[in-house]
Amino acid sequence: MTGVITDACIRCKYMNCIEVCPVDAFYEGETMLVINPRECVDCGCCIEECPVDAIVFDTEERAQPWLALNAKYANLWPNVTFDGGQTPPDADHYASVPDKFDQHFSPNPGKGDIGPRTASARAKACGGCTKETPLKKLARLIRSLWR
Ligand code: F3S
Image 1 (cartoon, rainbow, N blue to C red):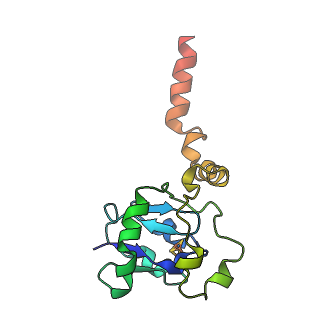
Image 2: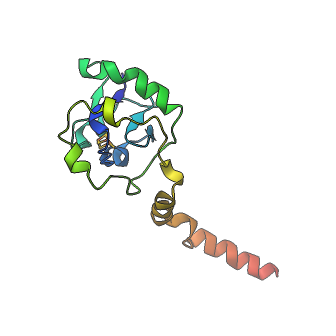
């Protein structure tokens, strides 16, 4: 079993889902995210988080048209592991639009974690790279004694 993102995500990209994924199984297209079925561990955490009910388990009928799309684009689009501000300003308008695939799906990749905004968010999230931990302080002191 795996989570599957449906067309309800298109042009919404609220990004709540990726914050709770324990295995970073989300991949970003220009207008929607998909889940890699080979990485998803079926915890279902993301299903509860999506405000437009875009994620379902693959056992549900509503998932069937989107299974192949999730598997295909998870191999083509970049991995995304945190919210870097990708939600479009008009997301709330598209939240109530049905059947968005034909008019609004884009096969183009999104920025994933390497876009300029997400890179900045990552720098903020990872204090371990920049802060001096007690171990780093000890290593610095030892190095200074050898000079
Ligand atoms: Fe899409 Fe819902 Fe996640 S709109 S980005 S599946 S929270």
